[in-house]
Image (cartoon, rainbow, N blue to C red; front, top):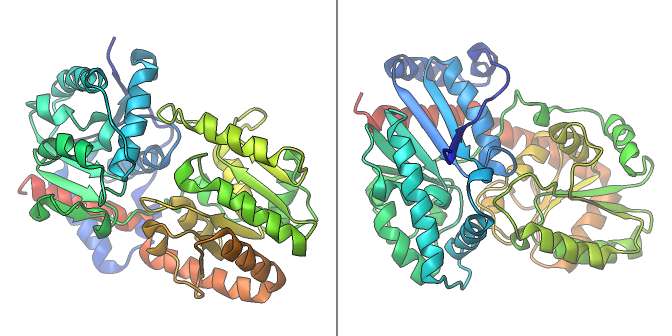
Length: 421
């Protein structure tokens, strides 16, 4: 059986529906480059087909490209064909690239490289013009693949302070790629070839269900079936249960908020979809133990009873009185963008990706401690008019900078360049 499995995406889109979000010159540029790329084959590969920001990005990116006539497909690892040890390794590898002090045994590296060699053999059969490898799970395929087209490495994480031993192992392979993509210039390790670096600021898909805007009352009525009280203030953080997202800090802040607002409720939404994040179970259990006995804290980790996770997440963001994203490290933080698009004044952590979106005290707040986070939550709860103004500023910021049609243009320009069209 093959390790890589083609991901089928339901539904087509019409390019006219998203080109309207662009100005005249950008629309013209997209159509001109897309015409040059007709007949070319673009393939994206990543670890999982559901769960996590990369899968969500590709779920929108592929239909957008195809609507423009740029033949595009997406392949993900079939979790049934690899061992759990592989995903444990790549999860730790991900953390090491973000600076965690981690050492790996030789047999762990061997497993990783063997599976990458097998995936490389499958990639050659795809007959692509442009191949984009998303994140480190299949980074090493470049060492083994002698494919028909050009290969690009797309890093969605902060590698600026990567673990030294791990970086020494990966750097020669990363440098084999013709081009590299990062979401933030500050995430680029200084040892990389700067001439190959491209910065693609992430974006959200305004056409997706997840970005739908409904009234707070409508959203809370929907959420009441999941135990959320309609008439009490709601604080929400939407992100997987991960130490980098710092859910513990959110709970600590919530305890302080309860001293001023005893009826406030907290929802941590981190429904586990991705198979490549085995640590999520432990982080969830740690938070569940801490939150035990507090009826005003709701944790959403599994999807039991939830028919549509995208709709559920969208309703949580719309129904929130305050949205938090308390990350310590964050490649970008699309959940921040999503909430800002819904006119929420988001309170973010100190992660660089979040600071790229939130202008402190203009369209949200940046906080570094549970005490600061609690203070800003209480402020927004007690000053709804200020929250409304900041929310309007937040939506306008997303409209100008972080919508998907702009990201499509970034991709097309790079494909055109790497193929010398």
